[in-house]
Structure formats: C-alpha cells, structure tokens
Length: 377
Ligand code: NCD
Ligand code: ZN
Image (cartoon, rainbow, N blue to C red; front, side, top):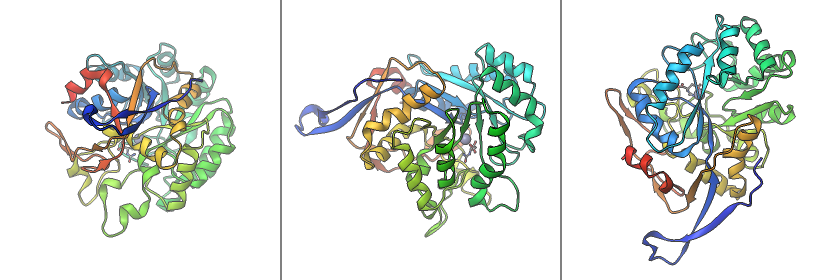
C-alpha cells in the first residue's frame, strides 16, 4: 500500500499569463479493473485511450468469439499490444470467459504462466455476448475449486437472469440467491463484484471479508435512471446493469469516496456504434474510456474527497490484487476540458462517448506520455 503524501497543488493558468492558480493533483498511474476493447477496428480505435491513462486494465473476454482458453487469450493479448501506442507502458490483464466447457487444467496453466489474470462469470444471457455464459454455477464447480486453490481471482457480472425478476432487482436477487452461495462454497476465492449499482451491493460488500472487492463505473456514480428515461429515452445511458434510483447512486458515491479499501475503479467502458445503440433494440454499454479518469475526478471533487481519489483509482486495486504500483504519474488539472462529440471507427461507424460534446471540469495531462497523445491525434 502506498503511503506517500498526496501531491496536490496549483499552477498558473493557460499560457502562464493568468496568475490565478488552477487546482491540480498527481496520482500514481491508475488501473482500470474492467474494460471492453472488442476486436478489429474497434480494438485499434479504443485501446490507446485506455493505455494513455492507465498502467494496466482488466480486459473483459466477451468478444464475438469469447476468450475461453489460454491460447485464445494469448493471441488476444498480442492483438491488444499491437494497438498500444509506442512509448506507453500498458499491461492488459487477460480474463477467461467461463462456460460449461471450461478446462481447469488449461486455466490453471494459463494463470501459472502469467498469461491469464483471472476469470469472468457471466450468467448466460445477462449482457452483451453472454449467450455462452453459465446457466448453473454447478457447471463450473471444478474450475472454481482450482481457482480458489491457486489464488486466481473471479470477476462476477452479478445479475439474476430469471425472467420473472424485474430488471431493477436483478443485482439484489443475484446477491441473495447466487453470490452468497458462491462465497460460502469457496471461502478462499478472491471475488470481485463487477460494476455494482445498488445499496444492497454496497452493504453486502461492506459486510464481506478481505477477499471480496467491487468495481464502480463512472456512469453509476454520475447518473440515475431519471437521466436515462425522463423527457425522452436516452440510449447512450443504457448499460448493464441498468442505472438505478437516486438513493443507489448516492450510496455508491458515499462508498467510493469514503476511503473504503475493497472498492476500486472499473470503467466498464463498453463501445457500441451509434447505429447499434440508437435502434429498436439497442445494445447495453456506455463508452467512457476517453475521459474516464476525469469523470471520476469530477465525482470525487464534488464530494470534497480528492484526497481519496488515488486510493480508488490505484492503491485499492493494487492492494487487493497484489499488483506492483506503477512508477509513473498522471497529472489532473481543473482547467476545463471538452469531451469529443463522436469518435469514428473505420468501417464500424461512430462511437458516442459519455458526456459527448460537454465541457467537464477536469483534464488529465499526458505530457509525460507525448507519444500516446500524438498517436491519438
Ligand atoms: C458490456 C458490453 O457491452 O460488453 N455492456 C454493459 O452495458 N456493461 C457488458 C457488461 O459488462 O455487462
Ligand atoms: Zn463490462
């Protein structure tokens, strides 16, 4: 765990002519513990945004052909590395997509060889490309036992897929019916509750032991379901798990900014083209990776908790997963910043980022990583 004094201060404004000091802070290069890169042209377009901000990212395995074996993970990792801008130090942490055919020996070998970081449990049909996921936890009991023995972490998309469960209750029901049982059956398994969205998840996390962690997305800290549904339906806020009531958003903000150690940054940046979002049956996913760190800084600033930002973005996930802290820093400056309206992906249309076209307060300074900036343009 880092125990350095927080580096907060100010700097002279634009062009060094304005004498007013702009608030700024420096954090150890953070970890994005949950991101979707996709494949092909989309992968090439989005990887540089994550690589310029984060020293590592947990790459979700729900590609069109899911990442189900060590061999596929190794190839996918190489494809990702080919998209990392020269000069950037970035480590993709590869995940295996669990299903009824998962091979415990292959997974253990991949983990011990350092190819695979962890495994992801998608309840079948819970979200994008999850049709190959798990229908009953007993299907993967041998894999979970091996993971528990070798210390390999499990990430869980924690939503019930029972068709009788209301979409706004899916997380709470999963916790009660499935997560509790997994934790009882595998008490030494390191488990991350991905993209938590409810008071129930916050309470469950807090009551859990030191092997239970959780990630939170920027959109679940910034918006509630009214933002998505009042005055017209806004498909770019539609994601899985769906945005919840305000009381849930407030509980997430309280937890994230409180200094609690087992909660950490996971953007769940999930790019889908505008065509696939704005249609009769739009895809779930918010594309946030371009300005991810700046969104979190805004939330922590609003909560007067900037001194806790580095724990959430960096130190907590480093401790939970025993990761080596980066020796690089990212500078955040409160100088105003314009989010691009759209991003073009060759042959795939356009992406619409979170806060598209808006002015946001914080700007991450990548001066030290000039090559990344140039390659993004
Ligand atoms: C993700 C995606 O599109 O891959 N979508 C989302 O809304 N979060 C899948 C996921 O993490 O559920
Ligand atoms: Zn995700």
